[in-house]
Length: 320
Ligand SMILES: Cc1cc2nc3c(=O)[nH]c(=O)nc-3n(C[C@H](O)[C@H](O)[C@H](O)COP(=O)(O)O)c2cc1C
Image (cartoon, rainbow, N blue to C red; front, side):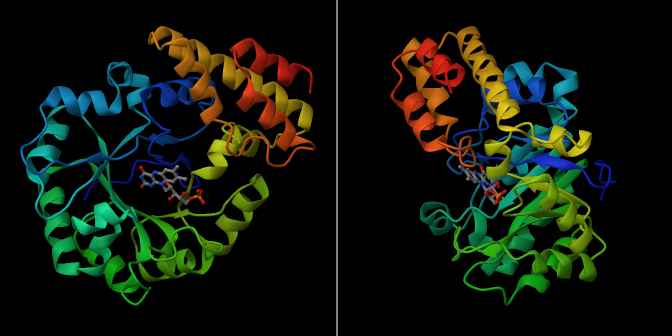
């Protein structure tokens, strides 16, 4: 077990497959440095043969790997199963200088679970224990787990927490739903409060925390060490700044921020030599939650989604 390196009340940018790739993290890490950590989406530990080290670096992003300041706030997430090359992969990651590793135990995908990975492991504690032991033995730096409260139901929740604590995990992030709940209903904050009461390991709360007011209430109610945000971080990538600087958001500020966010993202993809069509498409992929709370937001989102050029996307924002 190593000392958990994040200060209490840290705000962590969550891993999101298909979104938090190298380019995305390059933009948010530079534009919104108020987040205390940024996790890459999961690397699936392979089972036919281990990945070469070059591939492990590519997953977190060569440009991030080479930048000490960005690496200091980066978390490397893996997803594995009892049949995969876990020992070799985590040893290689450690040799490459990765200092913070997170194990994905929340992925609900049927394919992943059929191969005994992700949230499936929350239902087979012997298999879970085997994997945690391997990682703990071969990865000496910070090692955390990101869990749901169970697979089919929450009956093993406290056993899972105890197992992770006994095996020396450095912190546990809890997305407070079972795997079978997927995203149904609202994540129940009580699970996080219970975890804080039952374990000495730092607990990171996650699930349906949307605003600075939610963040305050969540810390107060659950007593958790830190908070991880996913969809709200996509909706408001500058949320950590709002919270820490006690800034009040207006629609005007929101539109200004979105414009800046798009411009940085567009120039990041130019550096990477993306074809124009995919640069515009990536901007569209950022729009899922951005306009949810503003008046006529759906119409503005539609204009950006239908735009044929980046200039058209920006002028939709300017003419709002
Ligand atoms: C598009 C998307 C992709 C996700 N990919 C990952 C992932 O790669 N690893 C992971 O641990 N969780 C992943 N998650 C789950 C989130 O990190 C988070 O646990 C969940 O969305 C609940 O938090 P929220 O209410 O703040 O969104 C993903 C969520 C979304 C919406």
